[in-house]
Length: 493
Image (cartoon, rainbow, N blue to C red; front, side, top):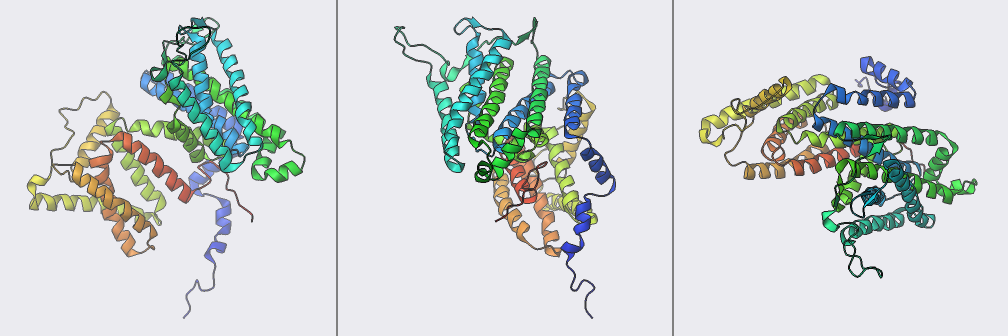
């Protein structure tokens, strides 16, 4: 007897369901949200962000919100060059640094120059546009990898000049002049001041950064909807065809570089005033990679994606600074990922129950055969100094986890060995076909992942941040290569 599904194409049979999109309550919410115009969605999100300072008096949280606004603006500027115009600009962070150092020289005691804030920012914008046109001029003849190398060289040269321009010999001075302060940077910068109001705390700068983000969103949105935006996108898809249709591709490339440079430069000026100083390492290659990761994570060419990517990559690493909060986030994300990615849902619930049971059984066995193997928990209720109900709940969750995970007396060696075993095991599991063996192996490997987190990753937040960002990008490229909010592109040979 032939099976019921003989001769059926399941992919074709499910096409109507895929076109309909998500169903249920989540699908209805997503459909209603998507029906709202993009401009109003962004305005609503900015309005929600504006109430962050009244909700909390914690300057640390407000500073994180300001950092998100700053990096979201930088990601938007880069999105114009890379996402709209399709130009691989690896010197973008140099404009950010140029604006910061320009503000430091125009608003400090370095050369006893104290311009008004509005004049400094306007000059920085014009200066950045000029350098953007200068850097964009090679793009008229270079494309792809060649353009990337030229722009990367510009960024590296800027960092080296900011370090070495502390002993500049000029003809009219007998002694060398210190311009950038070298590796020590420039400090004691003037605060921003508008209409007689001086910005003196983190809340003031948060609102300035939020307003600057709103301005950048509005201008970029209007340009994207105009003929210039359509011309940028056409040039990105096929420069030769766009030029054959009569589009001024040379002018469009220069405009994209200048526009992105202006946003980065003014953002750098605000950042310098907010930080109160500038240093060469603030504008290194790691910052460039972070901004690119934000654009790619959110979706190249997406305004909302740039803001979302900046929010994720600026906020998630900050969670690792608090071990208790990082632990709650890790296990919540792990459990949610299992439930969302495992089909059917009861299989995901069974996997979670299996992991918990496996951990309890393994701990019991180790307690019987090796009582001295287990180390004392690193968190104790008596030593816990908590100030809120959420922190107390996170502390209690950490204590419960430590009663479930095996803690060797020496954490370093077992943690490193477990990490070396975990990576190839997860790669091998991903290549296995679905079946009972894969479901069974998933349980000990998830427990091993929790063991690695508790013994190695949570105690080294600097390394974990890099691993976390890399893991997010790898998973994104596997499951959603167009980014979280990006539009799927179909390449036609």
